Length: 116
Image 1 (tube, helix red, strand yellow):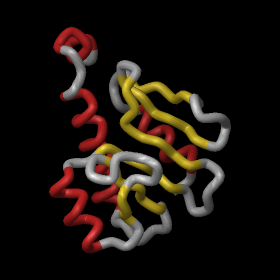
Image 2 (cartoon, one colour):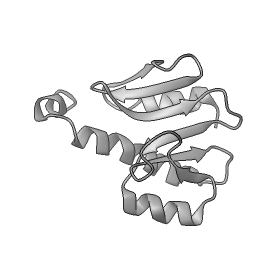
Image 3 (cartoon, helix red, strand yellow):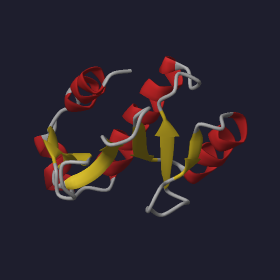
Image 4 (tube, helix red, strand yellow):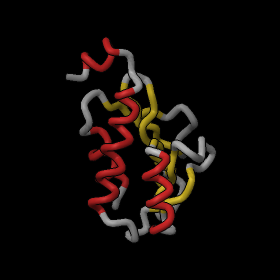
């Protein structure tokens, strides 16, 4: 997956914005100021870090070597996926949608209502 395709997918979520708070090597995707995805741009293949449900994260990590605990993140709640093609695209899409939903769920009610 190219960065252009990945960025378009991440930005398709309501209220999603792209930011570079850590410099040009890491694109951070946020909703209401909260990160739901980080893309390591200086890696080949790309690495995508997403918020995750801890139980699902453990399960996916046990199946796919490309899914590991979040790099420089809370290892229980974030996973880093190496986009080498070994993780099925359907699962990757599910994980992206889940990450966004988990972050939105944690927003204040007024912030969530603005995303409707």
